[in-house]
Amino acid sequence: MNKLILILSLLFMALPTTARNNPDDYKVTCTLTDGTVIEGYTSIPSTSHLISPVYDIKISDTYKGKARKYTSEEVKRIVYTSTLNDSLPLIYESVKAQNSIPNLFSKDPKPFKKPVFLQLIYEGKNVKGYKTLTTDYTVNNNSTKVNYVWRYYYLKKGDEIAKAYWLGIKGIFLVMKKAMKLYFKEFPKLVEMVDKKEIKGKQFRKNPAMVLPLMDKFYVPEK
Image 1 (cartoon, rainbow, N blue to C red):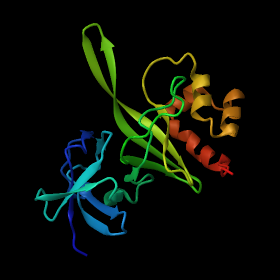
Image 2: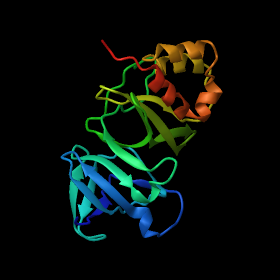
Image 3: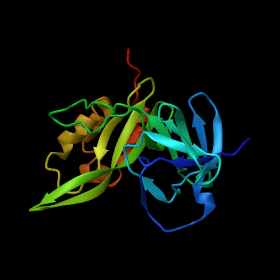
Image 4: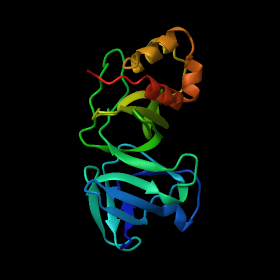
């Protein structure tokens, strides 16, 4: 199989976590929507975090060579091969997803106009879980601070759009219980657990992914 080098476009931004230059950190397998599998190297290592929204990637025959752009509608999955033996391999999937978490004024947020690349963090029988790093802004007096926060998603079997259920902003939530019941509205048993204080706000905020196996367990097909 011809090995191609995967180079992310300017929109495929990244937030570095460590300074490394190990070629294995860049090695990926990319699956296109037509089933074609491409092996190569990205310009963004597995040690970096991608900043949403990401709509396209570029592929070239040589490292840093002339690249061809592939949209998120053409790419299905990107796997960093050096992480395959990790407890949580680094995998990105192209997903139709809501552009924000629900709130009292917008209980069903609109999706992005195009699929976006989200990091796969849970793959169950009935539910998949994703997260993506995004930006949040804090305004103080005449200054604006940019914060990087995680947005979490679940995608039920048979659904076309991943639902956002948490944004990791800092601060005190006075209506956390009410917010969780809104986020979990498609899973009545989860809402019941919130009412019974079997899932507490502090616990959920510390580990938002904790509810994904429960969503998978409590999933009920729509009639």
